[in-house]
Length: 450
Image 1 (cartoon, one colour):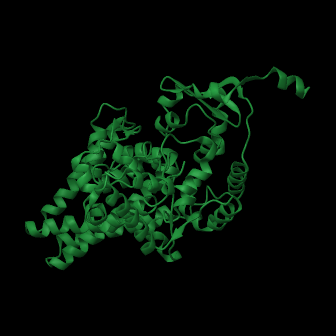
Image 2: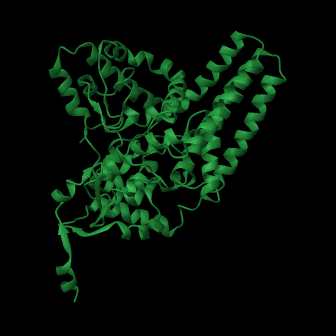
Image 3: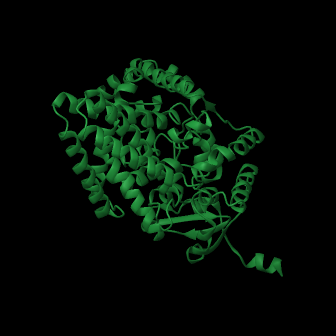
């Protein structure tokens, strides 16, 4: 009986599936069943970028990573009737899926341990102190302390926005969306819509030079000499032109790295406005714009309450400098890791995540400061897992990496800085000596993955 059913199945080869990978014709395979998600991509909660990047191949591991068990029932309406021919599961993928299943049975994806409540409470308390320091105190030191506390407040609020973008931190989807707008747009001035757009692409195409927007910082930074060829960004849909200005800036990037990070928020504010007022389809555009208006109301008003312009400039720079620690953390997690060219491959999900991420080792009492993202690999492998669980599951990830001879790199904060600066310096020296292509190719051979 089973043999008759098997014979009636219609099959499609991987080569045939690969042809359905363009806008207007998007097919994917999940556990060997082929689905047409062309129309779904337009309304996909995670945006169309993840589907566009992975279309035309099996995406089982990525689907499992990003979707709860309740999502499986919605797949049937997209089923094409075809099955993927010669569908096989690698040992790494099998172990990864078993681990996800085990976490689900233990209920780890639902155990959030009141982290959001504690973080939001701390944000509210810090905001009250900042207001008191600016409005009620006349000492310049009180104003400096308030600015530094505001930077820390932004960091903690961003972590809540990040968490709410990966899983529900509130009791309902509506309240979760409200938390995103408040913690992202209203408090930090950075749109949650912009964050979702870029962040989902980053997770799917982790450390792909042409698909991951988190590595595309031309003309200021370049983590690889591949950028010297003015590669096309498949995320932004334009060429990342490496011109004379880019070469000049990149040549000294290991010196300018920290100063640039101190004012990096200016770029994030600009990117937010460019997206919200672009022609691109933006989910909840009006709510995002209203949230940004809230930020650009209270923040300038707060600064205007300071007694003079020197203190106002000091306040802005101090708050930016403290919050730059968070920007630095994101760079440390990826800049010195392996990179590759081309789209992500659904068949090596676990391998690409381990290759493209670095963990930052720290004591348990510092988990609040890093927002759980010091366990970057664990977060990338299990993005729906609450940050309270990341330290607990880390030993299991280490064991799985050892079993399959995959890298698990956990560095101290100082060591991670050294690795990142070394990567930036190597690329900087190459930018100064573009007349020696053989040396550049040799470096790429040792530092490019994929």
